[in-house]
Length: 330
Image (cartoon, rainbow, N blue to C red; front, side, top):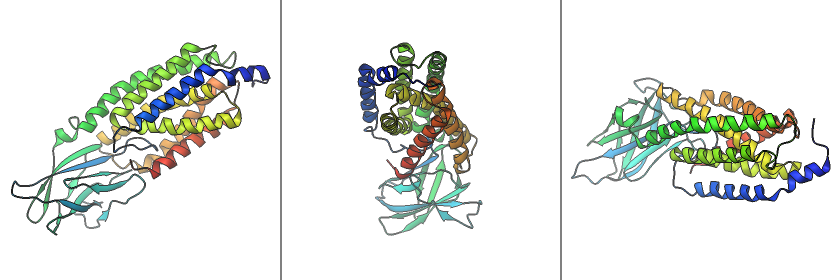
């Protein structure tokens, strides 16, 4: 059953206070995008990374010019290939360190770096065992020696420490989001929901969104950027389809607040178990997120939209953020 009463629809579309609140929230999200961070990816969340810190003797003053991370399927690197640049995936260097991000790494790796003395030095073959790995690379006369500090590369690294803090906050956000979503879904059984008839549930939803931005921003701008992109799409969609903008925005925010913790924890556990090749799971993740977010969007608004429309909207949102994420390397 959908709303057919024109006056009711006009009331939902003309409620002005939540609309002003919505623009304030969007401005907050935009501010998060100004924070310096090199790991913002909008498509599927955090991806495996490697950071290489180069150490040289006191009498050396070498500068990194460029380099390559060779990917190998076997421990001898008999068939090595450079890490392919694909959207945000790639390898880059500054004058004293290098870093990489990938959808999935090969089991073994080797560095090939060109220095300011004109020499190209290759490293020993090493294996990545952490989702966010940090390596110390000693510059020798003829080659490079990669040393993996296990403690430094796991819980003690800055990236993983903030990731752990984020994982502690995500369950709180998830519980709040589930509670707000159930509340709105139950209220929607009797009548179309709006800020006027369920203000506490709406406030709880946006409070959850704020917490998600904080905890998500500790590790990467993935979540703020995803919410920002999907919010912009939702605004245009609501205008085009004449839907309640605040209600639709709230449902989309809750969809992200519920699905993202599952995704982040799954990726983190995969990395801790040594599974850094997440490309094989990409399509499966996206399908689950698409279907799950469609259900989350539909139930609080089943008086206004059909499940088919919710499926289409969820597909539109996820496809947009995914494709934009492929093009970004922030």
